[in-house]
Amino acid sequence: MSDEIRSSRFGRAARMTGAAAGLAAREATARAITATGSSEARTAAAQRQQLKSAKSLVKLFSGMRGAAMKVGQTLSAVDMGLVPEAIRPEFQEILATLQQGAKPVSFKAIRKVVEEDLDEKFSEVFATFDETPIAAASIGQVHRATLHDGREVAVKVQYPGIAEAIHADLQNLRLGLKLLATIAPGIDTGAIADEIRERITEELDYELEASNQRAMARVYRGHPFIVVPDVVTDLCRERVIVMDFVQGRRFAEVRDLPTEQRDRLGEILLRFYLNGPMRHRLLNGDPHPGNALYLDDGRVAFLDFGFFKRMSDDEVRHLVATTRATYEGDAQGLLDLVAELGALPPDPRLAQPFYENYHAIFGWLMEDEPTTADATKTGEMMRHYMQMRGEEGFDEMVLPAEHFVLMRSVMLLIGLLGQLGATNTWFDMAREWIFGDEPRTELGKAEAAFFAGRHEYTTSLVA
Image (cartoon, rainbow, N blue to C red):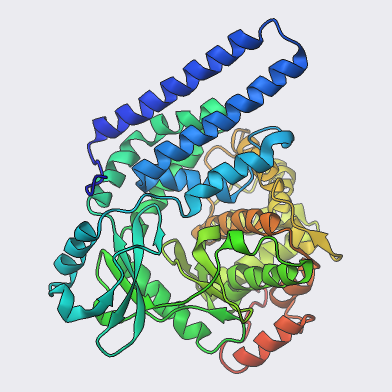
């Protein structure tokens, strides 16, 4: 096992190219074998090949970590309809191993990073430190430890060399995404590359992430069903975050809970990722299955705050206004609001297609009846969005940051709720920030009582 992430742009590109060539060769073999067979045999062979390709992606991405693995983790969280329905569950299960599937580096390498960043001897900081990581992801791994005052903590440490490797990946990302195109021809890999390039560099700054987490922990301290671990500010650096240790189950362990419990967890996820930001102005844009722990007492702990947006009151009010216009079917009103921000020209011809795409993403929140989240809808959303971006008038569309992050969060959240199989009248929760209605659910009432006098909704429409 290598402790230093390979950071050479050309070396990492060679691995990507080699993997892509291997996938192409296997597909050519499969086509040759089935050329004279029945249509059923050809279909079965093609499906087997897609599953083999998914396994190859997992092997490559988990070994490379960084930006490459981030692509795989996003694909594992969102069902984009990349493969036929018959093999979709197995395909998603293979990709799901990327949620916690990175190979850890040695304790020796981790210790070196910690001592360099904290500028202290290991024994002076920690009374105990478990050398076996409890989690290993795309950018770093997490260890359980104890401080000298007895406080149990989780220590998140960046892989040595990961920053350099990510910068190399960002140069090679379009090449690496050809692996994805091998499995799903026609997907706009360029758009995916652009998104990752813009956002992932922020996640390398653990001091920024610790600041985000500290702000969120302050908001939710003592909350009835949401936990955000406090950070130990004095021990957080550019490559190290130390936070309170939380014991809980992973997402894969709660997907088979009884229906009522899964529905409850679904509401908690929606309240944290959507309702919460409208109240306290802190938007976490990464509803990833690996970013939460499910506690035995029914609470949910949220752990990752690298993809983050601090919103102003005006930004929130504008989001509410656009959502109201979508709910009311006011296509021209929606375009007017977006045009005010310079995201699109005020061309009436753009109103209906933009409305249809916006409604495709947010419409499920406006269903006033019990609805089971459908993860396959995210694929439909992506196709609508990519098609719209290719039409005249939309090629230079630049959505405001809060719209972009919220749209991404919503699509990832649908994927998460869909994998959970959660059913709810989601509009009961959305009404609280769209219209300022009183909560209709028990969780909503408990949350409103907790926040009373602390974070009132101030989402009245812009005059």
